[in-house]
Image 1 (cartoon, rainbow, N blue to C red):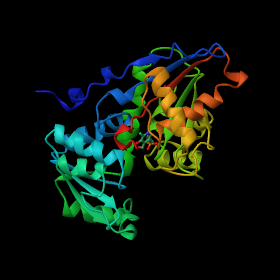
Image 2: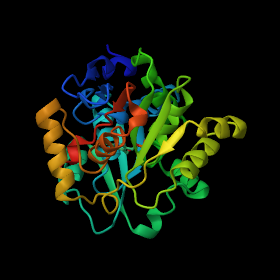
Image 3: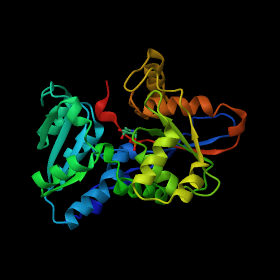
Image 4: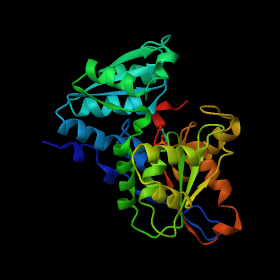
Length: 302
Ligand SMILES: Cc1ncc(COP(=O)(O)O)c(C=O)c1O
């Protein structure tokens, strides 16, 4: 029988060299985590793996988690739990919604996730200590995973990506939502590599959010301050805000698909790839080795 660790095969995630990219002497590579699985794709397996292992070792029979109406994390959790014979409960933001509201929620429902629709005020309590304790009492056989998989286990799962990037690289570019992926990458960042983050949200304070998550997951403050020196934030690529987009972005995504065979989504990876392509035109990137981490998200595509 397959164990949790080998159920989702990260060897599917190749490090693709973009040979067609010919500019500034740059060696451009894409770490294709989108190829891990159709739904447990991109950063999702990285973020869920240790929560699932922890749930199993605590003798739990399911996962309870939180997400918005189009959440990649919810559908990934539903899919992973389905594959592992775990139960799953999804607490969804918006009590006007139903399992039929969109294809993400439909898929969660089909995969056996029990969906609970919360009004926005209750949803705001999703990280509240007392509220979570109430849920632990109500659902004692479920392991609770925060929205977006943003816990200690998510961070260490994302740190493991470095085991699959064998060469010396100068820059890594990655999209940012909860910052779990970027925090994990930061903890394992090789010396002389810069971590470039592209927030999907408008007005998002990337550095403060990363510090907050690392602090909440009990990493030391001195270590956090040192690590932050290696992060560069590119905050002008949200295209108006979370989930918003422009024709220019969709055209760009189409071009990337045609030229390199890489599908992108309009919420996270499309914007991050766009930002990277603009940024690396600068002379400072001449002759550098650059990796883009493809974090998946393709289930939510337009
Ligand atoms: C496709 C995709 N890319 C990037 C991110 C951002 O990752 P994180 O929330 O770990 O910062 C998300 C959200 O989890 C996502 O769904």
